[in-house]
Image 1 (cartoon, helix red, strand yellow):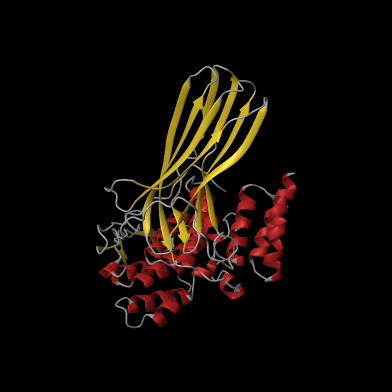
Image 2: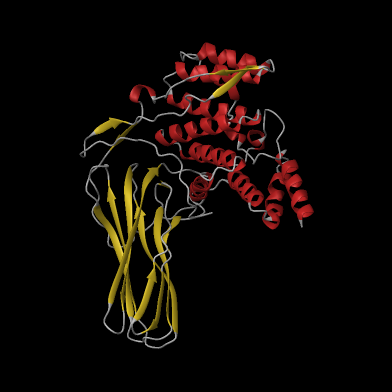
Length: 433
């Protein structure tokens, strides 16, 4: 799932200037007007919450001076994780030479690149995958370049990070070559920066004509803490509220983490504790909308960023189970923002999965960019459960019966109730044949 034309809303994370500069990351949460919770069967209460900011400036970043260009790909440390990093295709140029005065290039840029979440000791390979074919015009040639620039503040000048080029010639016709040219992004420190990947193709016709095409993609890269292997926890994967609905793609219930009562037990010294107790009581008394209302109120009372992240996940799961997918999406977006600012890569991955699942169910095109980010993260650490949840959802969306049958075994082996949903999907796909 790569190169889909969609982006999640940007996070506004201010940067400092200079090696010793520090500024608080201010992350606007999205529970605002339009986030509705139900207080009873016949009424909806519109709760205008405004924009939450991470309280107390507890999350900080140190912005360092830009690193110098790296002419060669750094050596990557040995890792037990499933992959060394990720690959992002920036362009797929097609170059054709049909006669001495006719050389044509089309860059086929892959635009709207979502931000990259890259773990320490991993590489993000920015790739240009090209195809050049000579039907004639033996003396025609081309030069393909990939220049990668970085900057550490929005108003800073772009600085060259690395560059690569391929000189394309042939001694015979007809001739075809398909190759890639790559620049690898690699950082070991926890930081973030903007990237500009500039692709150019210079075409030299046999009759002396020269033509040039240039285009670029821009996106942000976040370097996050490394993550160890995630073990399968069947109890945490089991939905604790409501019956799984075949109309809704599979959510990752590991984000529940004890729910309202777990938060009430663990946050006894927090200003929101009494409200968390009320949310726990509502959940235990079969009043899920009352629990949602109390959890949203607790978010206004606390200054604890970890609690905010947990609240976002639990509210998202509750409202999704209650059928309010729009509110669930807002909550999961909040979870993405907070977990990113807190540098919690596994929790970030779970929040992204749940956001993508809800958006796909709602047929929101932004889901595909989020799926790419989830796929990127799964390429960097081992999480068998998370990967199977994602593969099941993708199989459903793209009606891939074979893949869905493959992932079915994981849910059967771990005795998970999601197996019933997968079997329902398989039956539907078989009936549609």
